[in-house]
Image 1 (spheres, rainbow, N blue to C red):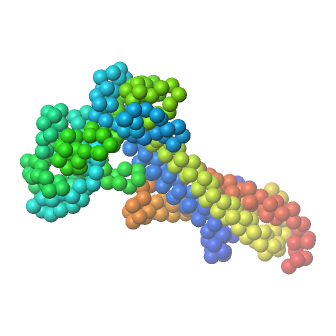
Image 2 (cartoon, one colour; image 1 turned 90 degrees about the horizontal axis):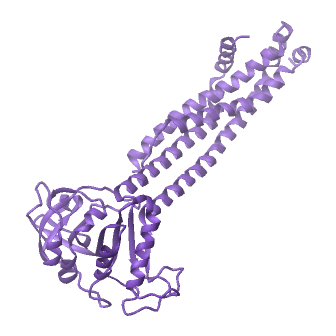
Image 3 (tube, rainbow, N blue to C red; image 1 turned 135 degrees about the horizontal axis):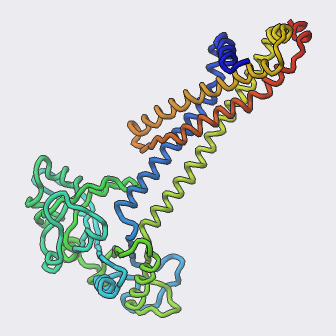
Length: 410
């Protein structure tokens, strides 16, 4: 019996009870759609993390004040647990693997312009900040060392702030009041969009470090030149560990820490943190896809049950065919073909439903989904395999039926 004949016979049999055939494929449809949707959302999440890594750079190191939780408290001098401008200067002067050092102070500030007011993140930075964070300009100019040295009343704004406070106009040259202090807008930052935690990276204002400390935020009581963070850009992204070790050595010497004392600062590689997030996301996607695959197994059991019922209902047909000379393998092929057609149809419908669900998730629920051929192909092949595996027993049972017994039952 040829494959085309088997397919035509199977389709005729299934067409005789279309509703039952459609319901039988429902489990496979749900399973394949779930796998496609979850893998697409997982791929979208990983793509967003990759873009974050590309934006920040793989050679970026963040230094924060305070000892790590795993370290013993250090017994250093008066500067213990604090990062300062002097730390940043020392890193820039003594670090061979360092190309940019950007100390930062940060706070939330109230903004006002002729168009209205808003609150935003304020950061006091130096000229190295833009090289360290791979941040480009959309218009105007950036903050330079002369602005920091002179505590200039100048500011740069992100795209979100520009749209909110200076609609339908070029903000460069306009006046922006930050905590009631008048500042001249000298530049607009190129858009970066949302970070992985959902924060708007364009909702910020940058001012010279000294301006922020002396005129807006105020000096910290613990140290007059304290900073919230130091961002370091290393020369070679392939030798991150060596660069971090150099940073730690320089700061430990500057802070007067002996060999038995723990660090009074924390050093983290941002790209490594994002990569860990990506690995976690990939692992979670695989887990959810595996759970969703259980639906395919349930769908396969449903196919087997329906095929067993079909064998019982069609015993007379089987008996007549075998009495007319049909071989057991022809009966086996027909019923196995029906099971495979059910699973293939469910796989195709499930792939389409998964694509539609991914589109809806992206359009309506602000979830990024990346559809690729590989997961859809794998889900489709797995659904076909499910139909083949779970269709074997009913088909084998049908092929082993005795013609006389089959005719007597009807």
